[in-house]
Length: 451
Image (cartoon, rainbow, N blue to C red; front, side, top):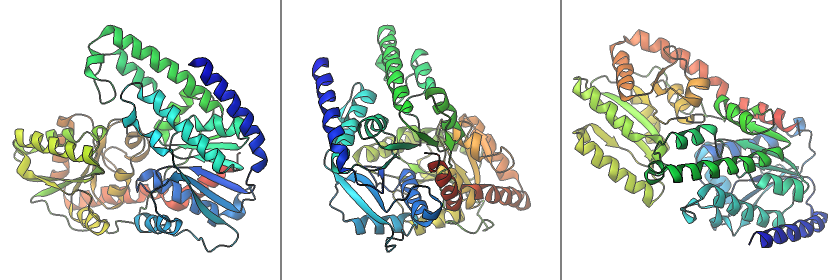
């Protein structure tokens, strides 16, 4: 099997070396198979394309064509661009005759789905991404390749086989030393099943697997000419894992999406707003535990969970969370606002008093920035992006780790006068301006010019 893989890789290398003669010159291509996802990663993608078009005269590459490798959903190029305009308010100037934008459909994207690989998920998913990358390189061979999804094996593929200039925008490292440490400590998490954490043999086996994967990941990083990261936490981990000096380029946030920082907000009850997809790592149970502590202390509060519910798994998680709230006697104090349209989300940001964020090691925290720009009193998890890049504790917001700490911070907020809250709002809305789209465009083009 190993010999067969080596032979296949060698033949692929030879074929693609010959195939290089079909390169589409003047092309910059983004690898973003789920470009219709509508999340923070997709905002980075379309803002990056906007940066290329609007700042073409500042980019050292004389490109005339921008391509996006994507999943084939049946949508036309125009429909994809219109959806991105509605979701992110980014209207790409596709009428510019000097630059064309094209979406290159890939049939094999299903190989990237982690559901296909219940065991050895990291490795097998990466190999699936490699296969998708091979299809992409056959369909279009660009001059410059940019991975904005986090598919590490596409980097050596497009550099060493495709002969491209290669860069990537890393939202979150595929593996970190803390992941390995948690396995060694026997901590059961969403990516370390309890039956593994209880077994010494399985734990040692998984640690060895992680170390081997880390070596492969290091080799992938070696293939990138330029690496961009989305914040200090990711920069530190990538610097530790890859032989490079990353360029920190904060993700673009529409800091003017929720205007009205001083809008009067009710304190009776005081609304606590949680914005984020219903995923295990978002740690919604900690929000429910915090709510229980506040209610037990006699506080008049309500928790509003405005979550993105993508599929059946997310819906099942909602049901589990609702059952958890029911068992803790706080279900009547929670409002579920799933997949709310933008106008309703704006209204929630204008009427809620507190924003809550509970994900451990959030790589950046776009929702945190948006809440702060809207004037909410932000209480974020005291780790990673929120701590290192966004929230100055007690000045622009608050940081907490346990349910008790979250409850203490929110209690402190409820005790403050309107004037004291306005002082924090003013500092917060001023602070988040450094995460604007214009700032991203400037930093992205500067990093790209290092290629």
